[in-house]
Length: 324
View 1: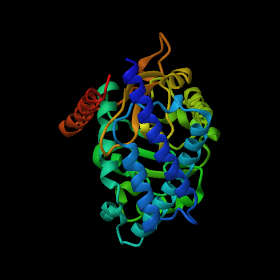
View 2 (view 1 turned 30 degrees about the vertical axis):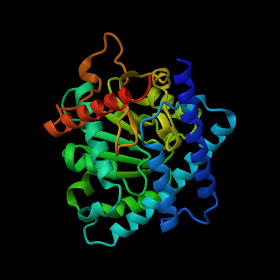
View 3 (view 1 turned 90 degrees about the vertical axis):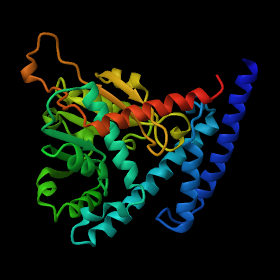
View 4 (view 1 turned 60 degrees about the horizontal axis):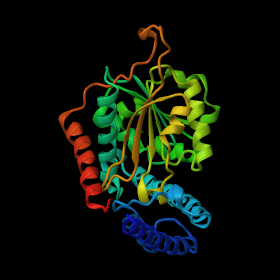
């Protein structure tokens, strides 16, 4: 057991050392806008963090925690600039939605959306949602676009972002598509200021970078728990293992403390970086089910079901290969 513990400690030490070096190199860049140098450093960072790891970022020392917090903010800044760049590139086309594959990580969003839809349909079955909110949609709202086009063809999506410029960019992407243009709305608002509107949604998605510090995330979840409708579902993106250097890690207990029942916690492997937490606001005992929001998801198509099961199997196999 001591040998295994020493091995895990050494793995963590080497990983932190490498990520610390990459963080320093990224912090020295004059700009985080897409460029060969920026792309190369972030590619190396992602490839370093993706492999299965027993590293628990919550157990890191104070210095490593400070480095991780800086890195997550650098990643968020770079991700925003990358999405803005490609949103502008896509907007130059007559129908931007015909060219979404130009975005280098588009396939990741397809897989993540399949995974989330499959998990929702399995854990909160029912008719499809009529209204969905996506909090933290950004200038390139690929999650909403993929879900609306591929999985929820009759659902209305309200996209919330604190940045008005991001929303303007996002609106341009659906201008030539009558269907999605009619079903997609974009609101410039801090979610903390959105109250009674939250009660109208059957499902709320919370982007990984909304509330980057644990206490910020907890406040957002508590706010959603206060204002979402009983029976409505919440999908929270998190991270696991070394991927916690790229995105905030959400403790499922924080979701429970925010007023939700946690139905599933899924840690995928491979290209999909984000973990997914599926939760639901409980219906008060004795409440009329017809007046509460059901989870409202039809059974997933076979490909989504297979996708979700495959991610689970890959995770199990990967963890079996690690020393125990």
